[in-house]
Image 1 (spheres, rainbow, N blue to C red):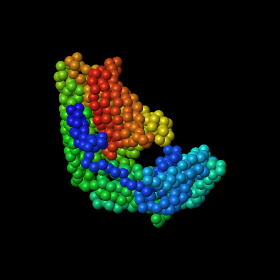
Image 2 (cartoon, one colour; image 1 turned 30 degrees about the horizontal axis):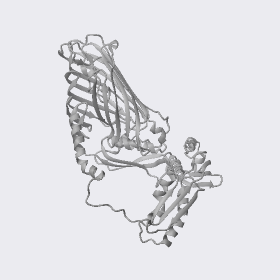
Image 3 (cartoon, rainbow, N blue to C red; image 1 turned 60 degrees about the vertical axis):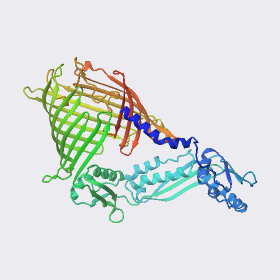
Image 4 (cartoon, rainbow, N blue to C red; image 1 turned 90 degrees about the vertical axis):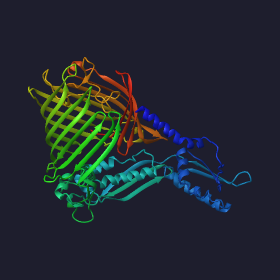
Length: 611
């Protein structure tokens, strides 16, 4: 991997060499002569005002007119005074001192215009008033919404008045009105009363709500393979509920995530009909019934990867979805299939799956088979499933690496809670996943056992819950924890797929995939009954020219342990630093980590967020 990176870097430098040489002033055939200008403009003003004038001042448009005569330039300069005053006012300065000087041309220098601006004191908001008209004004059910609009108003007393801030505050108030219950709401009165002598701004806004809307039935177009009832179950939009734009967006995302559709657009039809039962338009384009996808990739965990996935969205006879997948990489070779029924009225689905796998597990190549059957339910923030599972695997049973076939049958319940602010790029919130199971070994001896695995991931902003640029620059702390246990009497042989290993890109960095386990006297690594893992990471945005970018820096420390007894848990520690990039396919993680116990550096690459 490191040799490959060196080759790529070297190639990039070679390709960039000619451009770099020119940038350093290497020999060229031509000498670039500056284009003539009608006049030079010098702006003397604070940085904020200077940047605004350099971008928007009308006078700058005429610098390239080389035939501009003196009288026309004088006229443009006089007009620039009012233009400058209007531009400076957008920043909240309504009493600026503006002086413009025009120096005539001579043989040595062209004409020059000097613009001097002393902005004076900025105007600040002294008071604001938000009024409501229409049904919302007297509706007790709208009290909370009215209060939220007032509480969220950004230009509060003491804040500096700017045109951009004024526009943003009005649009925010209108957005809060129209995205909940009142989609036809409008701004009817907006007034910013500025007193240039006292530098005070009194703001008034009136919001006309229009009627309150409730959802009616779905008006679905674009169906060929599936019926309207199927779409209704996936969308989960109940007629009679109050309109909320977030509900429509969530329903749209559910339909897209189902995999049955290539495009989905959902909107409320307010053009006609009764507002108490407004039609919901659902425009769909169905995915192909069958799809074959070939994928290639690379991972620092498992090297080069090849996948082949076949999907049949409507199996003949039963109407279930079938997904079959072949995976080949350095650590794992597997083939499996999963069948999933359409959701019922409560969004529960029957599912069954089979998996045959060969995987590098610790120091051993484990051949395993798994059969699963049960039901699952997936919501926006809460997933759950219960199922019966049969496991069969080759498992190391002693210090000389003797392998034995182990089998188990278990009943399991699993759930995942997600409370993140933004997926796949969370900045605050938490997630919790728990798996509970119990069963018995099979074969010549049947022994009961229990199994539990819990995962936690939390994001805590260091700048508080404020979404301002300064707060975001402080970054966030990411806490990750995982714990697992298999409860059984000593001496029983369980399939290794029911036990634990750790290490790798998403667990303990600085170590390879599943390199942390129980160390046998022979030095070989095998899976164990107990798992503990913790991670602390500081993520901080990278800025350029004072603005946030799509890149972040991070420093971290990970620790994890696996043992057959809780007293034997000894943490393996990894420390390091890296960067994150908000790529179009999800967060890209690039980390360089040092494994403290093995005294070795390791590069970790990972794409995507999944919890």
